[in-house]
Length: 97
Ligand SMILES: [Zn+2]
Image: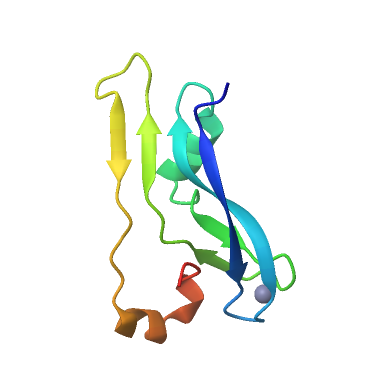
């Protein structure tokens, strides 16, 4: 059984208002999904691309990294706190609200 977990969520593209469904990774087992760890390190794990207009945007989501056999065993990245003002000013970067 997989330890890694992606939450299926509906999103609305801030550029073209297209509604689409995508999985957002919340738990990543580093041993079973090194590809996802590489995306997280590169800052791309929580970036979505609109299937219609190909606009990309970051999702504000937490991430728990499980690293069996390594210290520390767990690494947690909390959801960033984004103010309403910032969301209004840069709507293309926020897919979570
Ligand atoms: Zn779009």
